[in-house]
Amino acid sequence: MSRIGNKVITLPAGVEVSHEDNTVTVKGPKGTLSREIASQISMSIEGTEVVFSRASDDSKTRALHGTTRANVANMVEGVSEGFTKTLKLVGVGYRAAKSGSKLTLSVGYSHPVVFEDREELTVEVPDALTIKISGISKQKVGDLAAEIRAVRSPEPYKGKGIRYEGEVVRRKEGKTGK
Image (cartoon, rainbow, N blue to C red; front, top):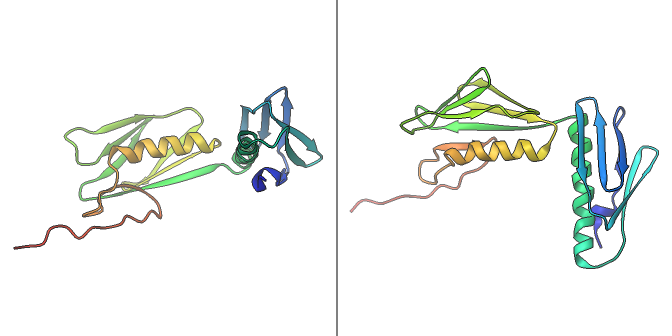
């Protein structure tokens, strides 16, 4: 039994959901998102509530039931509030700079690492050690944050690297003397 798939999505004010065949479109104050859903899952809109049901009880359909509901709920949240990920740079000499449509990272390599801006995403650098990524698609925000973090992920001995805000890096003791 999918507990997530059976939950009802309540639409906030200003958000419209429509579906045609297997495509769901969500419009809100921040933008529009659309996504294909599996044919085994049916969606019905009842006033300000969206309800999902499944055709059969096999394991693949049950998994799709919860996943589809979660994806549409993220779309609704994205077009109404948006998503933000914050990255912190930890290390001597590590810094980020934004110039025009390019994000430049200096994280201990012999060369700077440059990221181009992506459509639908906003990248801000409030200070040299903080990067804020925001947008309406949870997947795109998370993908860009993961790519930036992968440039220099935190290492366990000194904790240097790029980490998510609030991420705890487990530290190792390191070598002992003679």
